[in-house]
Image (cartoon, rainbow, N blue to C red; front, side, top):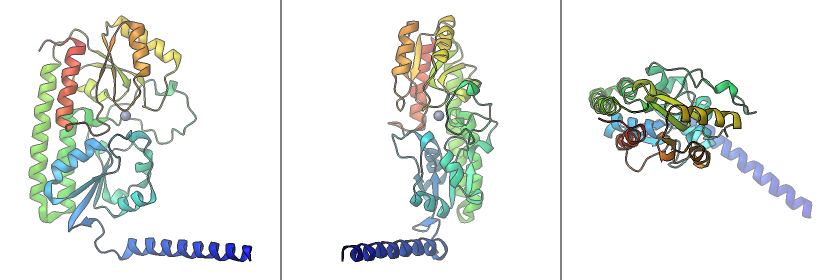
Length: 310
Ligand SMILES: [Zn+2]
């Protein structure tokens, strides 16, 4: 009696599972509205800066959604079945290969835009090999994937994104190109503000929580010393003392922390070298304002910390 009930219950589950599978398969092929919502092409941005960029360039011609929820560190994002399906159905997925292994695995090359392919990349952090860890490093790319922290490179991405959207939705091509040009101009102006604001500084060394600011350093001739390469890795004692020595030697007054990473390590380091801490936002998640206002806040923080005079 008891076992008979169990069996039929299990059988019911099995039937439900089969039904679910059938429905999922069916919707993939038969849904004629795939890639659109209310007639607009659906653009999926992997995480915040790409969401901001997609919204600027897509304007009212697209429906933009983001895979990484606000407040979530994007590097360790895992995708549910629903999100993978959403990716398959989207008109375009905008991502950066090397930031999120789960997204790298799920995207369809035909309907995705890897923003890293639009710009000249710089090599990944040089202390990458020194970091231990059993997690597979098979997804690691040879370049530093944090390209959005250089406004000039992001301007180039805006232009390329405009071309991709225009190709995907030819009826609205002019709108995409116009908005891409406006966005690129805004980012170009921001680049000029940074170049001017960081032109004359007492020190050019920035010690950061994780190595996210390589492109900013590259553009404005700063030297980035990241305590860790990625936000999930705990620095080794060797790395910490190495960074401490360097910070002292270069007269560093501020150790930068970021909102999504515990400031503990940076605070310990700061007290060891007699420095303060300040938040520098790598914009891996949505800031309180938008990309431009958060970057302006970063500029002010950098000017104070590095003793810039302009
Ligand atoms: Zn990062």
